[in-house]
Length: 266
Image 1 (cartoon, helix red, strand yellow):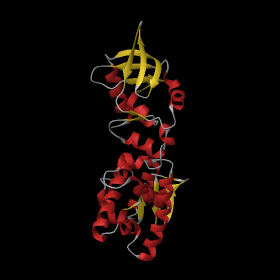
Image 2 (cartoon, rainbow, N blue to C red):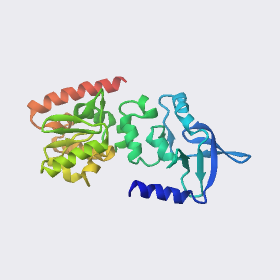
Image 3 (spheres, rainbow, N blue to C red):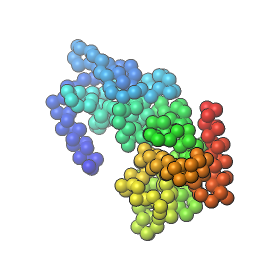
Image 4 (tube, helix red, strand yellow):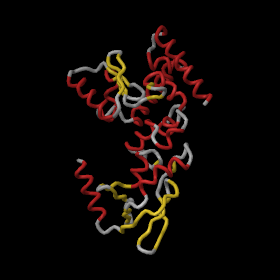
């Protein structure tokens, strides 16, 4: 759907919804709104992300004071300001203060880019939130081998024929993948877990999907479980993630262990 289409739907949804003014923000899941003389508390679904404490959130939330909030039965509260409308849960999740019930794209980006309250979370937290089969510390250690940028795994990473490329946004990384595919190339690794396109591109619905942190991590889990079943060894499962050749897999595993041990100390 186009941005115009989303904006139009939000505008339509706001018709008939009660308009209130945000008077105070208590936490990422609770705020006080006023409609005329009456004040009430609005609660939001999800879990607060307060690894950095409450005060940084309250500083961020000051921008919401005085904004219009529209609510209606069965609909998400929508906040209006500066000529724009946005579901409040999506805004809080996008900026890293709320873990919504469903980790959509915006919430995943906040997690892996360590926005808002996620900035003070353990480095393993994104993997704990998005993994299902493999210890998050193992995934984080491998990601530090694969896509580390400025001391943390970076989701918008490509490695093209051995050359690491780090992008500011998912859109920028996706544009480069599209150029590579247009040139009939598959010799590149994608995303936070650096999945090789030649061997595993078919595991993704699209190049855009391959950059989804949750999807990228799930594919990495599948590869690690397959390696474990084939080798019978946890050490080999990690080493083979890079190469089954001991001359290449051995040093890779040693680097992984350095990261893994560092993560355990934090």
